[in-house]
Image (tube, rainbow, N blue to C red; front, top):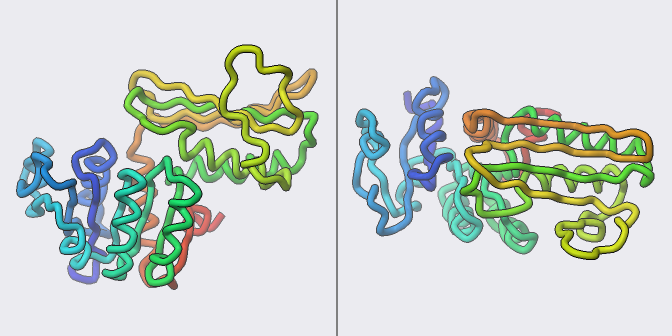
Length: 269
């Protein structure tokens, strides 16, 4: 049993945290060895299975991430940027694979992961699903094939509780489109239109965020030219796809050299 990688889940009480816990405990290829919540949370000290309203799993919720990481081979982290940076340093100290699904990270925060990546494997992606990562590759190819006569607009929708916009996936798609065109996304990104904005700037990549209800994740990449439009679309109806992808990444990272990777590496795309 001990050869099966032990996994720690951070942000245990959140939607993704609970989905990740279920995914790991249902897997024959991984075992749940720890769950982490912020200090003062009601779940601290409780068996996580019981805290989730089910049967005991024999794993208590802790607010000491280093103690939990020391027992693990991988950490799966869908929390907040500041917490993720702290977890990265601790996961590197414990030599754990750190799978990061946290979105809303700035360029500076992403760059701050580099010291940890010198000592441990980090797999970071704005979206862990196979379908989305295929969409990213398609977006890059289509953008490279079409000139600036085709305007690029990225439209994303998520549930009413999502706190960041554009979504991490939308930014992945924007980066792919920019890379296909051979430009820097920062230079061509258009994230807000309100009032008299003037005509659309040729070559810009536009972003639009929809928030409402329980939308799991919807992403369209629109290429629009006079007389024709091309739409690439991915619809997610179950966030379990993200949890399965994250677990796949945690298992893939075992034995890999320290460094930063993404789901394109994991999926061999």
